Length: 265
Image: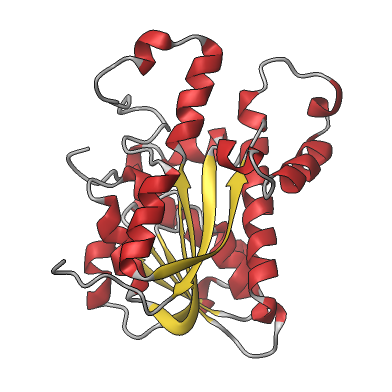
């Protein structure tokens, strides 16, 4: 990718195709389960400082604001932010959230300090320089803060095309996404992301897959026809080896370590 992807032209399609379907329900269920397990204080009386970078439609930001947390939202897409603001208004928390329409690279011009929880979901794979985003996010983490990061899993993309027999696609020298597609231009291998985290001194506290089987189903049968059962099984297998590494997305919860590699090495 030569430049970061703005979702202004994809906002309506993204809302309809992902969050208007079981795909979005599974994603939210897995992410919220992981955050609940990692941060018991999410239901505590003391408000947490939360930053959602590339918040998109803002579902988690709104949910956290309703719990009384101090939430800051950022996105480069005015269309996505408009939808998120509408959801926040309906939930009665519009004025409880700080909103910033800008690229993440200029967010520091508006947002100061560190946060207890930094969210960045399904953003990094749309960027020309994904590693730079992770370094940027680390700078917003408090000493004990948690970074919730998801990325589009290239292993999943390749496996799905193996199942479908798209061997010519797999044999291409390089991957180029359709500009009108919801498939990102920079899908990432887990070992790639792990290497960046290690270099930056970010320790993986937990990892799981998001949609570890749903996206591979071609014939709906049995329990596949019952959305609640699909979500239950996705939650059950999302943290199990080897299924977690087949997830369309990988969800990492990360914290600071003191083992960052100096930037000049």
